[in-house]
Amino acid sequence: MEWSDEAVVLSVRAHGETAAIVELLTRAHGRHSGLVHGGRSRKARPVLQMGNHVSAAWKARLPEHLGHMRVELQRGYAASSMDDPAALTALTSLCALSRLLPEHDPHPNLYEITLFVLGFLDDETVWPALYVRWELALLDELGFGLDLSSCAATGTTEDLAHVSPKSGRAVSRGAGLPYQDKLLSLPQFLTKSRPTGANAIVTAGDISAGLALTGHFLATRVLNPRDLALPEPRGRLVGLLRQRER
Image 1 (tube, helix red, strand yellow):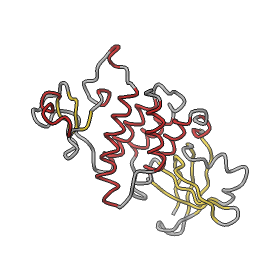
Image 2 (cartoon, one colour):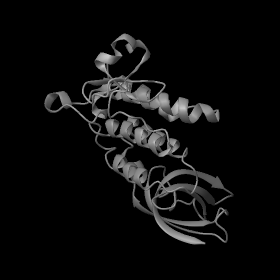
Image 3 (cartoon, rainbow, N blue to C red):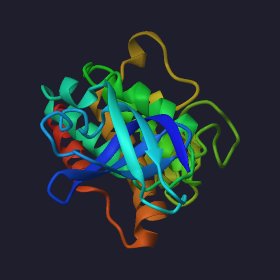
Image 4 (cartoon, rainbow, N blue to C red):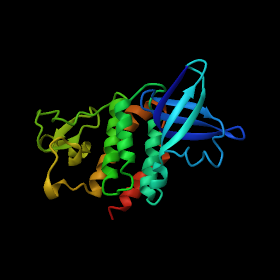
C-alpha cells in the first residue's frame, strides 16, 4: 500500500532517538499518520512544524499499519505566524481540533478551507473571521452543521440575530426577543444576508460571539459525548482575541 498526497502537519511526536511519528491532514486520504525516519534531525525539524503545508509519500504493507512517510515542505505557515501570538495560537487550535476528524476519512472541502485560513494568518484583519468560519465548517464535516439560513420560528431570512443552543438553527431578532437571554448571539458576518459598506466591518465583539457560538456546539455535540474538553489552545485563543476588544 502506498500513496502520495499534499497535507497539513497536525502533530509531531518523538519516536526513538531520531525518528518522529507525524500526523497529517491530507487532501485525499484524510487524517493520517506515519513514521518519518530522521524526523528529529536539524534538517527535518523546520519541515515538521504544526500547520506547515507539505507533500507526503506514505508506504506500508497493510492499510492499518503505521507505515513509513517521506515529507517535503511546500509552505511554512508556522514560521509566518510567529510574530502574532494570537495567529500562532489559532494555528495550534486549528490543528488540535482537526484531530477530531476520523482517521483515513477524506474531507477535501475542509482541507481547502484549512489551507485558505492558514494563508491569511499573517493578516490580523482577516484571519479571525476566517477561523470562526473554519470551526463552522468543521462542525458541518463532523455531521453537526448549524442551519443559519432562516429563522426556525418564522422562516424569514432577514434580521437573523440569534441561534438556538439546542437545535443549532437561526432565530430572527423579533422572534427571539422573548427568549434572547437563552439564545446564542449570531454575528452578522456568519449570515447569508451579510451587511455591506461600513456595516460590514467585523468587530472584535463579532469574533468573540462567533467563537462562543462554535465553541458551544463543539463542546455539547462533539466533545462532551466523548468525555473531552475544548483544546487548551482554543481557550487561549479566546482570551487573546478578547484582549483586542479593550
